[in-house]
Amino acid sequence: MKLIDDLVSAAPSIASIRRDIHAHPELCFEEQRTADLVATQLTQWGIPVHRGMGTTGVVGIVKAGSSDRAIGLRADMDALPMQEFNTFAHASRHAGKMHACGHDGHTAMLLAAAQQFARQSNFDGTVYLIFQPAEEGGGGAREMIKDGLFEQFPMEAVFGMHNWPGSEVGKFAVSAGPVMASSNEFKITIRGKGGHAAMPHNALDPVPVACQMVQAFQTIISRNKKPIDAGVISVTMIHAGEATNVIPDSCELQGTVRTFSVAVLDMIEQRMSEIARHTAAAFGMECSFEFVRNYPPTINSAKEAEFARKVMASIVGEAHVQAQEPTMGAEDFAYMLMAKPGCYAFIANGDGTHREMGHGGGPCMLHNPSYDFNDELIPLGATYWVRLAEAWLAPTED
Image 1 (cartoon, rainbow, N blue to C red):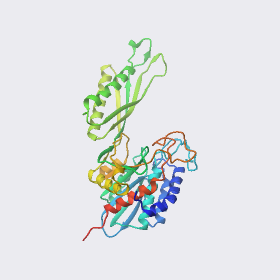
Image 2: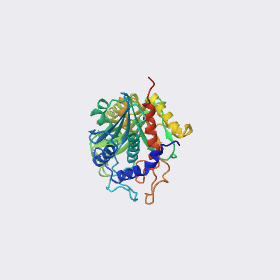
Image 3: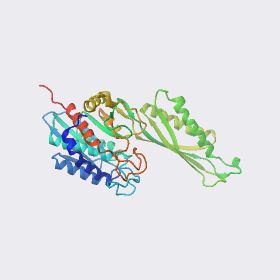
Image 4: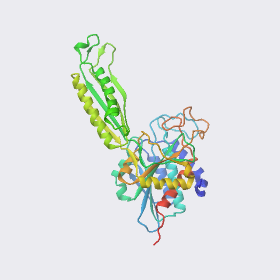
């Protein structure tokens, strides 16, 4: 690995910052302490700061040379509403809040890169350091864009990165095209007529109707969607009834839909609505259908993905840069990629053996209460950020 020496030397101090963030997790749009910490560090290093975008977002501005060209590098800052099982010294001090997805590490890697830019800016142009709030369900990327992120800080392309547990440290993964899915929720309420369970002919039972719908929805995946397109419909909640001898008045279905394209999503939403309404009508009932689109699919542009891959290969070697298999998880960096060319990549977090004594009994996987970010990634991830910006904004010959 070709790491930047200064980043290796500074890694312990940045790791301390990361652990401080981990110990003080903040949920979406509440990242005031984290934003203060980020802004303070950037200011101490002489980097101008813009605050308050997307509620608690922070943008650092690093200029060098005379070029008008610019690149954006993004890290997320928020934690998850879950209880941490770890008991080591930097475990969460706030019950029900935890950095279980590594956003503390993402922030630390970008801070390390910022410190290196402050020491030495080997590029011609501007690097915008985007510290984003509310990735975990709040759509912080969307809110920063609404607040004028790309108007106030015009950039040619934007790049993001996420840690990926289970793969050996020293590896990256990146691919063009869809890498993460859209995230969507549905809620269907079937309205029947309650009655005595011993006399079903006097009632309109919504439960068998719900069962019909659950089965029929899967035909959308198997018969309406092209086999080569990806899509998932998962009914994850069915709520009905309060007593074993009472047919309920209504039954509620909820769940999630995931796709890699908006066209497939449009089709699934339309077909689900049609199936729900007509199935209810076939049994003499009515239903309401609600469909909420959360995050769009995360789609890397080909040029930027290949550019990122070459930078990664220059650091860790071609053999350690893998193609990223798309995942049905979702990521609000998708909003930035809808507005700008760019690339969302992955950096291996290891198998969990890096965790200190006092870690929880569960695996070191994302959204697990025993997770912890691997501090060994800080100089590697920061080296990638620095080399990426330097390569993108390399001075050109007159």
